[in-house]
Length: 335
Ligand SMILES: Cc1cc2nc3c(=O)[nH]c(=O)nc-3n(C[C@H](O)[C@H](O)[C@H](O)COP(=O)(O)O)c2cc1C
Image 1 (tube, protein in one colour):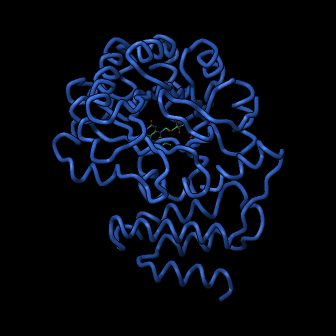
Image 2 (cartoon, protein in one colour):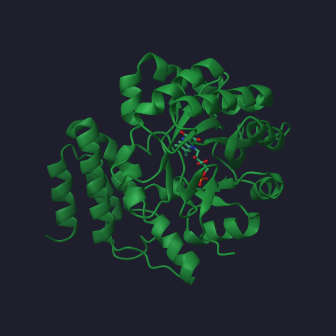
Image 3 (cartoon, protein in one colour):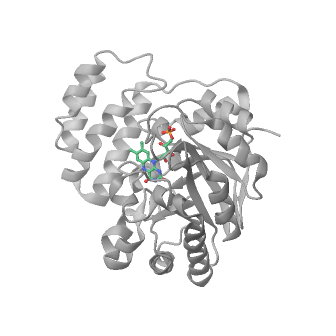
């Protein structure tokens, strides 16, 4: 079986198995558009509060809109109240996502103290009710698009219960489970334990997507091969590196990949800036893109062609207008 292959999530058929993970503060509409244009087969919005959606839908809805590529995407919600999740999913009818994902892994205090995110894993039966509510609302308002769930391994090393949670989610109607095999206590530190992904992929009746420590095409190939998961989700490895999807496909198909040069990298960063500016305005977009432009100067494929990276980053973090970015990058190219 080829490592790059289609994935079937309930009624949804995707042509490939390279996904962009939900990443708060990064996977906004602009970045999802860039990733989809550059090869991501499926993208996830950052997490959004089901409660907030039902209270102040216009601002949250704006965050959750489909990217310009028009490619399939999932909206990720967090919530511990099945009724609020049901009502929030009904509202998603205006966006027509191809899937709804329930966040059961966020470690942030402000999320877990509401009983949502990783705290849902403490109560697999409640997780099941939340998934069931989302699935019922999907049938009512979204034509029955699949509901997926993103889990961690457990709350901490004394409470590893991803199997129970995955089973409860699937019994309640989840059509794919993504596992990020760190515990809530680990946050984003240490290593993810891919043996948990392999264990789940071998025992679950629905596809399993793997997340954790995917920074290169080789990492993705290794995860697909070693765990037998159906799909991989790039998170930190995609920041400033939306090219990772096409490079991974190239690697999985041909066994090698060629990094993009700086002209290509900066063209993508610039397009991201322009897309973001059209969503949130130039001022906010320029501030937001400072960290993203810096990310584009690091990471895979950056080993050649950039001189004075630290000086460039120092200038980028002071850019205030689109024209500032244009001047800085033009000078970098020697124009
Ligand atoms: C800054 C940051 C924000 C994240 N936000 C979300 C989120 O909104 N929803 C979610 O399910 N996971 C979120 N994650 C987890 C990622 O989707 C992913 O599972 C995790 O980073 C492991 O992958 P990696 O080690 O390849 O980065 C976030 C991770 C980071 C670092």
